[in-house]
Length: 134
Image (tube, rainbow, N blue to C red; front, side, top):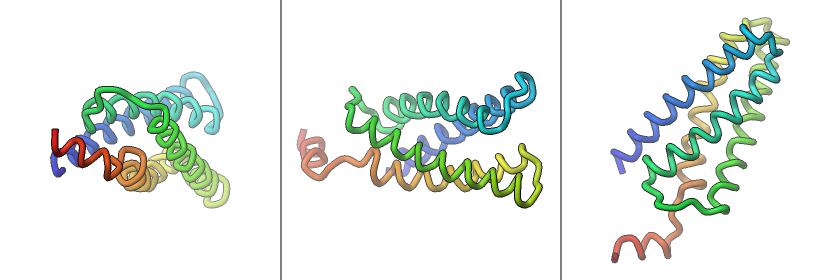
């Protein structure tokens, strides 16, 4: 369990870095506005995170559509939190877009971990017993 937590943090850290770099590249080099940059970075981040967490963190030999739908729903929630927080920090408090995204990613990563751990990748009790007794 503890090692699984460390793996989740490693994947989350890697994914946060990848997402932030994609956000930065879209915003800076491609001159996308911050909403478009956020959408692009989230889509790539979702795919990267799902496959890394499924295969490496939670040792899933296969993926199921129900688990992927839950995973996507969590990312819709975290995207919404991310967007609203960045919007508020940029447009209300006039904080730099990159600083705002950094702050938001910290908050969103905590929410994401808790919900993925206890909902998206949760092994249902009947399946847990099957894994224990095999």
